[in-house]
Image (tube, rainbow, N blue to C red; front, side, top):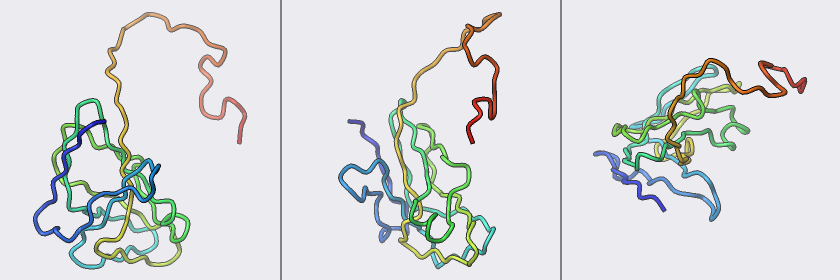
Length: 148
């Protein structure tokens, strides 16, 4: 178990804290802390505040991911997905939403807008070499495996 400190920012006392919506959910739902409703037109993107900040251990990162229901029903998703919150960031968590749907979509205060998933971040060290070990794939890149 890892302890993550959570701070509710001033003026957001009514905003729900991140929560899992089922016992085995991977992500914690995040809520919009917009002072008034925000309408995203088709193709429009906007940074939406959540009213919270966190502090987590150095071995964690928080990833911001879309909510599947918003994506399916309205075409609302996150850009830069997953968005990474580094362990040393202490500012407000904001979610970069875009409307890929065909109709305007209004985000209300306290509406669930994204989810936050915590992941372990391994410590790595680079070793400079002249040659890399060989594999069957080799340098085959995008589309190399022939799958659609």
